[in-house]
Image (cartoon, rainbow, N blue to C red):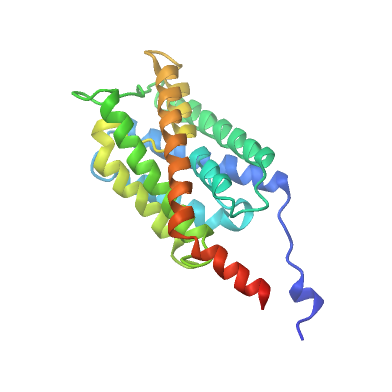
Length: 239
């Protein structure tokens, strides 16, 4: 019979979880900014993906390692994380946005005030941005739900690699179209680093809206493809 010590599972405090979300989003946004300002066209996507992957592995046990308001919304909308209440999700998103803004101020500072505009790439418009950001934010949120939330397809050892790989796919596929933000906090961070000039604030709002819609769509499709999770839960409860 298991001892009481083994049955007890300590739960990180909300303070620890919010600090983890701030830190993870800070490091992700800082890595994005440095790669763009360095003009790292070849390895930038891999660098950003690796940063997300190691942050996920390092902090998943503390906060769930969302580091992205769209991911937080997707998990909340899925209804599969009872401890993630709407109020807590709002606090997560606040910590993520603050982390991204702080990172943007820092990366701009170390590059002597340099920054970059958020918006469509050359020869592209917002129509293409909407499609690009929707598709790959959907992919990211859906994969997070599949490998980190689902009780049927959870990848307990490889979830961080799978999530990071979504960034590699997205940044390389649509970097020229939209920059491959895939994250409302990163979008706000980039606008902050650019001091909200050249329509960056409006762009951040537009990007964020598309990404939140993609998160909702991912949660909806996940509910269909992974309905088996709920069936399994019922069988376990009956047993």
